Length: 290
Image (cartoon, rainbow, N blue to C red):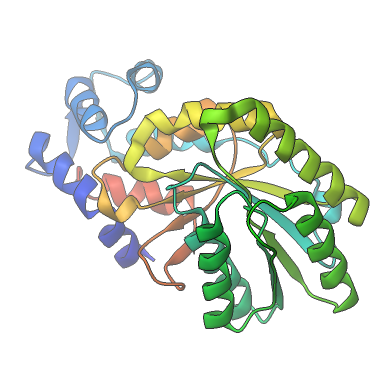
């Protein structure tokens, strides 16, 4: 796990070394501030983290400060955790890596021995339907898809009903992500959520937002818009291997108070790992402290 994370955050670690080239047993608050800024932690959070730290401190104090950011509780409907199928609705703006992440999630569930079905609910873009269909074929997973312009809620209903009849374990539903027409998108997503619940009580059991890690802390505003639309239960962060903004995870967790379930580690279907806050923090601190 640590080797994977070191690879994923290699550019972030390089940025840290720009301001902290030598590892130390102790660092000052000023040095810690420079490191966090370089890693794209927003300044409001940095001030909060530094508040209770002494002028100079060791690794343990830094770890204790950072881990507090992740002290939130998953707020989705845990009573449905054993639902069959368990329905994940995947949300995010176009270009965040949503369709690719769905394929990674499907592969993740496959590796645990679970069956999966996809629902191509982004009917606004023909390319999204085609891309998801190609992934379904590649992974040998059934998919419910229709033509561009068709009602996405019908896709949701048909996907869940098909999965129920076939005793599928997990359903992954794609959605449109055109934030430049927020009102229309919001109404569409709300309808998809309502129809999912009609098809199966409690569905979608989890609404997961895909955030592009290369956008750093600016992706927080996207998350707030989607959360206001339909409520978000958790986050997946993509493209972290291509950015020096790995510290933005701290900002995202702090401001949104939502669980980060997975992070993307590359382009292939197997390049998805569960996010563990302690491993993430230790990967960062390994670059700072002896």
